[in-house]
Length: 121
Image (cartoon, rainbow, N blue to C red):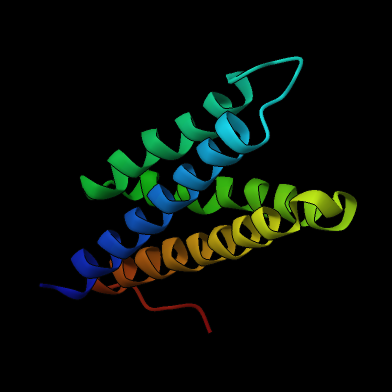
């Protein structure tokens, strides 16, 4: 398996784990009284859509996952500091979103190197 293909699979796996965590957290363990499972869908759908692009080898999918992972990271950090009841879930969300950002960035870097571009100094 090539380096880029393996990195894409790891990135997609991280995205799916984060989507699963988000769905469990807001869909089952702590559903919103006001919005119901809508919040879970809002969090899961972008991850699943861009994961399909990563698996297909689309550069924009990799870049988009890297960007939106920062929103999940910010949300996880906010919940970690503000809501003591969900610290375990918020910690897992923070770690998974950080891993997603790093793996998406790694995929983009490998892709650039395979295209013959020099990495920035």
